Length: 381
Image (cartoon, rainbow, N blue to C red; front, side, top):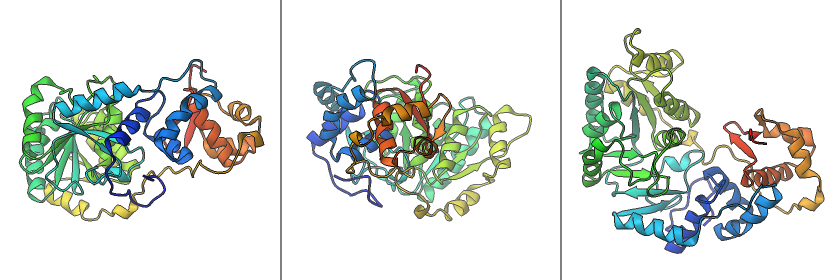
């Protein structure tokens, strides 16, 4: 199933064996969603990519053999998910969130509980402070209710405060909770009944993380990119300057989604984040009409699948054509992020040669990539 060179994903179902192969690849060491894409573009199939991982890691100078997710573990994960009524949904399948498929770094696989009975083409994320004010939570419930009545599905992270208020108000009209941990890890515990109510009323719980996984701090920004990616826009109700809500807003902006915010009293720290967003160009929201007016301007054609396209890697180019390519690329890299185009310019190597060396180094765990086509050596190097 070719996913990465077409304007829209094909709407076909994977077999169980194909999903298990996908699961093994995405759960293998040093393989994330973007790396998954690069491997498929280079090798054509998941099985071929899995087979190539040890050679890539060795060629990239890995200190030890790469850990490939065992087949038995993949079978066990799928069975555990099914035992609680869940399923794996692959990018390109009909029930994959359609807007998320148009975002860079879209997860190849999602663990999903529930069957979406609402239109996931019309999703809006509502995020905000865990220690939200009573007024902020009341306004969130009002806006979420009115948006649901207008056919919008509400997306949030099931956290205390604003998230919980948004989900509670939209249970009957459609809501999606995105987890930073495994889809079975309900957090906070007090929201277990709310999570069950979401599923019982035609909403869904979803995560890209392994079954049973308990999240750590770095997993929440990863989760937030999904919240932003599957939504037409993000509404920030209350948020401090340094908060996950502002990370979600930034990720939404990077994916050409609308960013909206509720203004607040200047001396309230919970209003500082929203006020800053408005100062920086976010849409000021007074009522649901402001949201609907802004969403009506959204043009899906502005988004592109995997917008940070690097070109295909499965071309007729042999590393023997440039035996010193790996060393040249390593010399050009440092711990300071630099654009890949600058690496190409500094090494005077073909773009495909640099991309192939970078993939080897990535699988070996020696480099890091960041948005804007930037790359750098890991600090351990």
